[in-house]
Image (cartoon, rainbow, N blue to C red; front, side, top):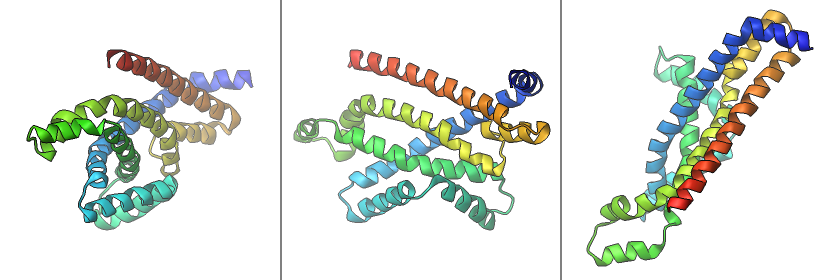
Length: 219
């Protein structure tokens, strides 16, 4: 087994590195755009307008209540009917962004609701509008609660993006399939991919914990 691991790494090391790079940028793009969309969803859930509240709640419940793989297939099969030349990668990326937005929305909603309600009441007494209160008072304080949650969501997305290998888009699990089909070995390349995922997620988790401690110390 050791000999096979060495042989695989010597021949396909760059394939694994390319897969890791694709996994990281796909995850980062999913979280970044998912965050922008999630802000609007979170505000919808917090809205006093019933139609916005219900629509945002249904959106979150549907996406959180159905498997990611099902959503990936739905977008992969459905989007080409609307956009003829859309690539598999873009279909998968849109599905990951939509899925991420539901989870990020809950992180943002929880972060906003964690801010002391007295802050809002004090701002209202000063004559500030609801929009200005959210921008100037609530959201800056909620950031401290939201950022660590977004970091955790990024780590989760790194692992969940492995499901995109079903569509052979070049992320880390796809590199396993490439090596497996070329060398007719399964266990060894799977061990390598698992070790890479473990190193990345453990490292990011440690970095996130340091960031949280510093954030709390400065808060």
